[in-house]
Amino acid sequence: MSRYQQGCLYRESRKAGPDVWVFRYRDGQANRKEMIGTVEQFTTRKAAMKSCESLRANINKESRSPRTVAELVTDYTANELPHKTPYTVEVYAGYIKTWIQPKWVQFSLSDVRTVAVETWLGTLPLADGTKAKLRNLMHAIYNHAMRWEFFDRNPITLGRQSAKRTRVPNVLTVEEIGKLLGDLADPWRTAVYVAVTTGLRVSELLALKWADMKFSLGEIRLSRGIVRQHMGEMKTEASRKPVPLDVGLADVLLSWRGRCPYNEAGDYIFASPDKHRQQPYWPTAGMEDHIRPAAIRACIGKRLGWHTLRHTMGR
Image (cartoon, rainbow, N blue to C red; front, top):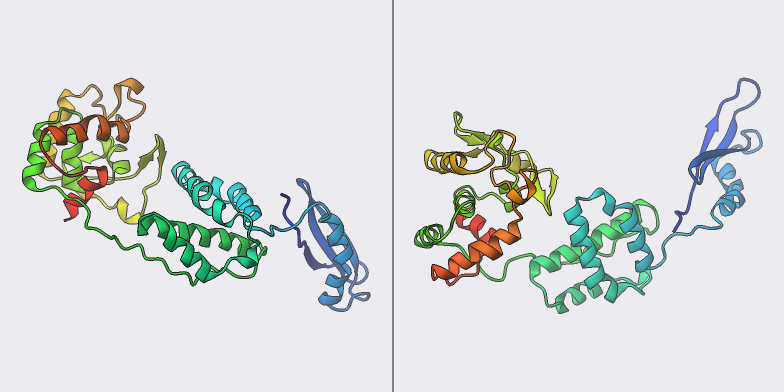
């Protein structure tokens, strides 16, 4: 869908004669401008703008603003999502396809109401945190409409949706950590040890390189994260703060460095042999194929995930 063009009207000076009103717009990939008349013909901006109506209608004869949620979502997907990370694009596209479109696709922009959205969220078989993400995505979509002057308000702004956890997340006890480590082989034994002692996100953990280990300073320097094997920025600015590297953790890492196949400064600490040091291991494969089976063998009756290890450090 082509964007509706309001155009730009401005006053331009001339070397000879009175100033003129100029209307600028886009024609495909090119910028165009038309002289509307002199300031003597149109003494006010309002008068000059009114005279542009037929010109504006002509340049927009193949264009119109989104009128339905479906059209707005299409515009948002084409013009906003490309600026997000690959993982965010994947998640947002899934939310739109699975939840937002089936309910709201046929609604006009003006028919979406705050309380109706709240009620809809309350019926979804999802965790409150996921419902809150859906609410925030719809808010972003309507903000896009306001930014481009497709619509004059955001009905999601006053919508309420709690993101509070309904249950306490699993954490491991010291005894369970010991059992898990005892049943794991490297590199996952070292990966789990680093995760539970630092609280790093898995995207930060697997993006670590040996150059990030400042053993002499006793700290880990974080500068990147990897999601779906796409390298990117840290999730938050606070994540860039150095992480303490105590003696025990340093010993574990140095031991692994002495045995791992890729131990140069520019190598990933958990580099995948299948990728010849160009990429780290996939987190899902490590959890599903190694860590969870080890937890079962160690008789740990808790559902483990990478966030379990992160929560364990922060308990």
